Image 1: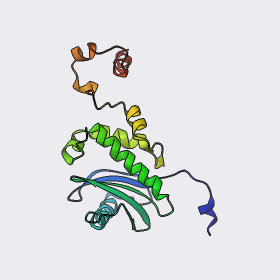
Image 2: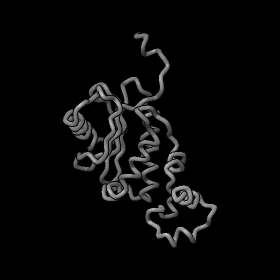
Image 3: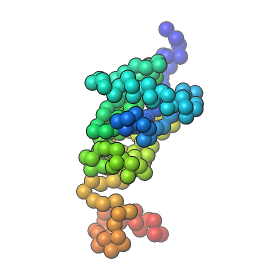
Image 4: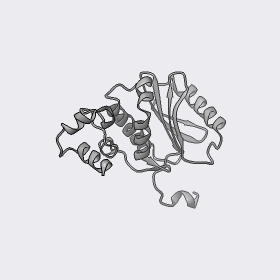
Length: 182
């Protein structure tokens, strides 16, 4: 056995991407610059992954020496890619955290249009879960807390100044407003 595989390491992800039901890229982040350095290679890999997985009922696939876990919802496909040595359960926990966090942000309406309308939140969620390929968080509640989204309240950007000033001054949103004003 190779001695490098016995060294302890952090759980890592090679890539995360979301495709629509036609296999078109909606979001992608590649964390290993040597994996697919060009946009053409990335899109070719995504097309191969989509062709292999879009009609399958599995949750895991092996392709081109990589472990791929995936999930579909209405007209979206969510993928998390790791090396073949990566723990599939950790990759699946990242995928589930991503899906549940986005489901919360999109108010259970996980579909293409809603995802595109909330891309800034989607990128924030991905960045809270994975940083530079290292898995930081796998608990959706922690991710949502860090991203500061609440399903029962409108984000501050969707509220008027009058609505914000009439909210309880002890809420986290009020503290964010006062911090941004100061």
